[in-house]
Length: 139
Ligand SMILES: [Zn+2]
View 1: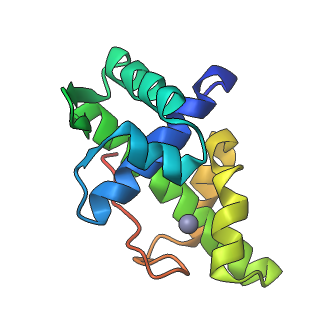
View 2 (view 1 turned 90 degrees about the horizontal axis):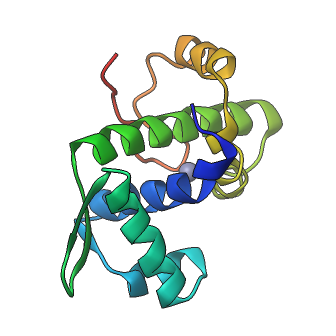
């Protein structure tokens, strides 16, 4: 679903969604810079790119807020991330925290075959091993 050129956008979308889940609906470049370990300017430019890609809007002096397309895409990414995390913890015995970190760099590249198989295997799961909700997505 995501090409190489979208790796950065996907990473940002996931973190914007996580912030939203934690009660932070508007994320500024300082917040994103801290979370992703990049400087404020880099984070600002990436958030502007999300706007250009129609994932949300940028409120001046405040930050980025997800729009409908951004939220749908982020939910799908986070869903795949958390289903994958279930598999890694169940089958390889990594701690949820380790699994989460490892999966963060792999979930973006997941193809349809794996995501479909994960959906089948974990269709009844509502929480990931870290205890976060696995978001439902529109079919
Ligand atoms: Zn995780």
